[in-house]
Image (cartoon, rainbow, N blue to C red; front, side, top):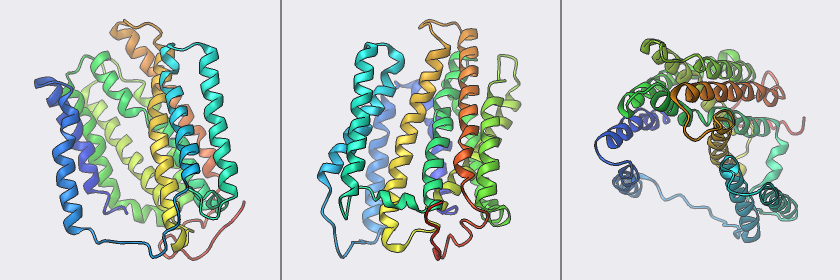
Length: 336
């Protein structure tokens, strides 16, 4: 998984540059059209090279679960999205929040009574799976807003151009690809528990270190911070993603993948929303000057750093030997 993810890291490296060039010389709307030719090429390559894997026994789709879970998550994301905009009253916001929680609770009750629910919640009885998925969710809440906050800091606060901002993001992807080389050795040496606990704390500290960037910070210091952040973020993501399957049997691999990917997408959405909420909270005026913007983003980064460090509580439930047989998938560790 470390090796095959390297090509995927080319996108985070080139994407900000491409976006900066489009914004600088064309129009920001063209960013969305860039996905069309890339998507067509991807579809063609998949059609040519990807084997046609199929399940022998296909279970019926849980339509009720899809409606309950999809509606609940969509509504919860919407509530977080508009929370800082003050477009709805407190009563309306509370009603939407309660409705979303009722829908999610309804799905939980519904899924318990089905042999083949939309998401196999019984997999959360496996300690490594539970820690990896829930830890991934809470960790990404803290670091998921960084791609939103850093360009805002660089462009609005420090006055960099979109191209310069994209170049300052690039070291993260370069470091991420470099970390993939030593990651398997590091996980074997330290173990998943030690890596995830220590690395999550380091990521939280690095987020708070970003809050030291100001108008007089040299570019080399910004590049160094971005490089370190990219390396440790890469270690975090791969560790969490591979631990998901450590104790999952082959027949449950598809369900585990569905839950893990769903939670990842949710955490990305919620992470950006959390970053937006903290930024709005610390920058109350619409027309803040650069100094106010920098100060507000610094406070948001500190808050997200503290949230990231707090997420280490989830990984403390792991035991020293968890994940040691991640490639063999031999032993289950239920409960705990």
